[in-house]
Length: 207
Image 1 (tube, helix red, strand yellow):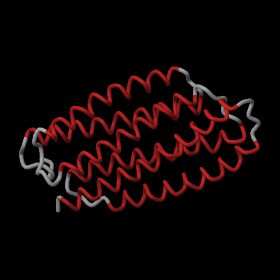
Image 2: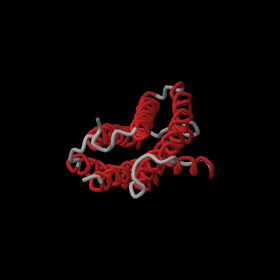
Image 3: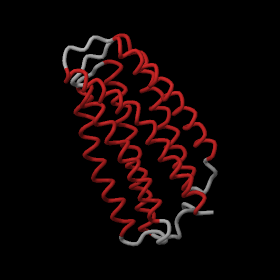
């Protein structure tokens, strides 16, 4: 029995849906890493399919919460966590869509691949944090690890945006898609950090 639950089936169903939603987002992020690392076009459709499935699971989780699962003062924080995970999910989809429209330049390719690797690590840590949180365990170590990785992404973002100034751009749209791709790729970590903070607030609320 999860410590977050009071023996209520609706609460169990909500937590399972939240966990499934988080897992789907992390699988989509892994597909994005495969897309950027090897340019496997098939990964794009896989990401779109996962995002659609994730939307269904998100709606199910929120519906159960709104119908009365958990105490009223906890519901806004639970919903915020779900929405932050969903925003990260949307960012993965957006990044894949923009990646289809560019040709990744060698000058920034390695940095972008490193960002995908860090994003993947953050996803894995967030999943561990969620599992620990619902069992009533302390997740400060995981929250700190995510913050450290997010800082590394920020540093890489600065390097990437410095280098992109020297990449020849053929026209306005190519430049726009490059900028959108890079902004989307590097903003994912911010959302994961926000989600981990929201999860930590929930653990404090349940004490």
